[in-house]
Length: 188
Image (cartoon, rainbow, N blue to C red; front, side):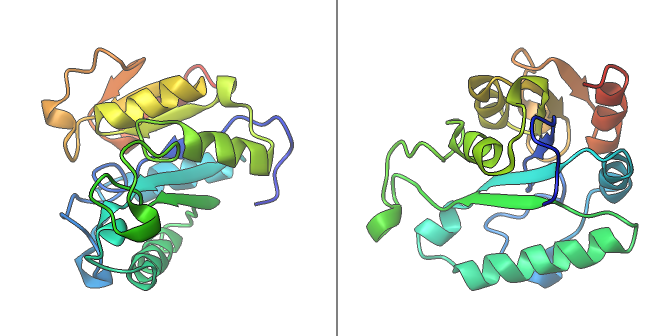
């Protein structure tokens, strides 16, 4: 990612926010982008706003699938996004889980959401301004990770978002497209 130091970004959860929720998604053929998600990412790209995916992937840590499977899903996502002129600038993944195996066995790893480690690492690596950035997700853990990192947060009602009360969110929207629309009204 080639960005200006101190720039605000939009952090996105993956499953249930960008793509339809599939338990332990590891097969690229099962990846389906949520309607309007690619257009929303493309809009952010056109404005020069960095788009960073931060995703918990306990399936890796539990041994259900490997990083190769994750990479294949992300490659398919990149293909689908590109069809609409969109791209993700960076991806951060946490395979850690309390039931993880080996190095991934961790009850409260700093990079596993709701902890902010993936966001703070992205900010350090790319010089992002967390206080001006947004985190968008479909679960309370996404919102809490964003809050802990100092970001504003948006809840989407896709994925698991229908069952989240939204009290942690600055913005509650039907989907990623609507969330981006609302965020851009007052960017940054």
